[in-house]
Amino acid sequence: MKPPLFEYIRAETIEQAVGARATHEYSAVLAGGQSLLPTLNFRLARPEAVIDIGRIAALQGTAVQGQEIIVRAMARQRAVERDDAIFAANPLIRETLGHVAHAIVRNRGTIVGSISHADAAAELPALLLATGGAVIARGPKGERRIEADAFFQFHMTTTLKPDEIAIEVRIPTLPARTGWAFMEFTRRHGDYALAGVCALLTLGADGRISAARLAGCGIASRPVRLGAAEGALIGQAPGVTSFAAAGRAAREAVTAADDRQASKAFRRHLLDQLVVRALNLAAERATGAPS
Image (cartoon, rainbow, N blue to C red; front, side, top):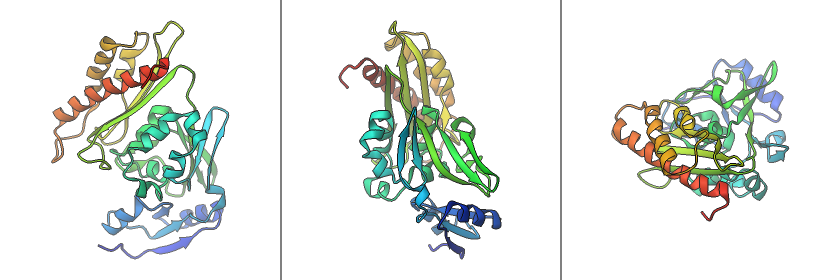
C-alpha cells in the first residue's frame, strides 16, 4: 500500500519543528522512519503533515552527564548500541538493543522514535520503564520532563501533547553492585516479543537485594512495571526461592488477551520463566560472577 496524502515539512531547527506541530491539528514526526513509515503505508496513521527532523543539528548525538545518559532524538539505535561510553555507564542499553529487530533496522531507527511510538511489545519502552528514565518534550510553552512511569498510556499512545516533540531520552547510569539482564521470547529473531523482561537488581552490603526494577513488554496494552515481582525481592537473599516467588508474582501483570500468537496462560508461563532467568543473570552480574 501507499501512504495517504500529507504535507511534507523539513525542519532546520527545533523551533521550526515545534511551530509546525503547533500549526497542524494532526502531524507526525519523522526521525528514523522505521516505525512511522509502516503505519503510513498501512494507513494506520493519516497525518495532515509529516515533519522531518533529520537535519536538526541540536538533535544529533548522545552524552553521558553525571548520572544520566542523554540520547537525542536523531541518535540511531545502532550507534548507541556500539557506543562504549554508554555501555560502561549502563550495559543494559546495549543488551536490550541487541534484541530490537535486525541490525539493518537499527542502522536507521532511533531510540527516541521507538519509545515515542510506544508499541506495547517493543523492547525500548520497557527499557525506559525498568531504568526509571524520562522523555524530554519540547512544545510552544518550552520543555518538560515526563517520567517513564507517566509516559506510556496505551498501545501506541503516550502523554506527549499534539504540539510537542520528544527531543531526547534520559536514562540513568547504573549504581554500584547492580546487575542487569534483558530476556524475551519471540517466534523468530527480530520479531516482536510474546513476552519480554528488563531487569535490574542491586545488592546491599549484606548481600541481600536492596533494590529491584523490572518491566515487561508484549504482555499488556502498554509496557508495564512488574511491581508485585519487585516487592517479592526487596530484602531477600538472591536465589532460587526469592526468584521463583518473583516469577509467580509477575504472572498477574499479563493482561493481553488470547490471540493467534499466544494465549494469556502461555504468556504468563513465559513471563514467569523469563523473570527467573533474567534475575539469575542479573544477580551473577551484580556480584561480578562470570555470566
